[in-house]
Image (cartoon, rainbow, N blue to C red):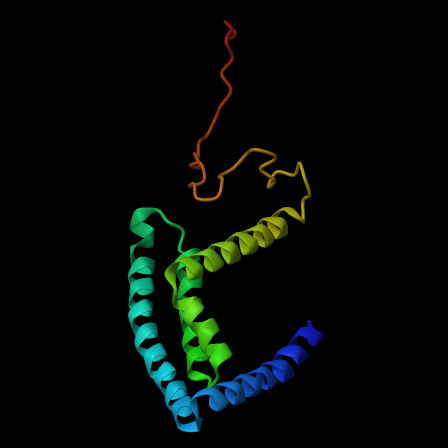
Length: 165
């Protein structure tokens, strides 16, 4: 994890500088700066527009039965796209624009939700282990995208079929 962070902190700025130099040589310094400012402005507009759409989906999620995890993650990805678009650079702009594409953002959010659901289910089952009262067992419980079965609270009392006379 630390090595990945080091590569990101050192490698990304170096890659951005390299791309800036290449684009600057191809189209000139002033058009390169103008293009960088234009992508930041365009990104802000797209983030506002996409963010409102995600907010409406998040608001409608309870009434449609959709779990709110995916819209919440999509909102976080839209915010990340906004940050990436505001950072000067063509590589970060490309990553931000990819995150603003609804199919790509939905695929990433769904994958993250599934991955986090797996961690949550593993953490819930870990204390008792398989076969414990909290473990639904293989093939039991709700599948992803389905509601869990309802819980029925009841009381029972034993009735003797042959009462004493």
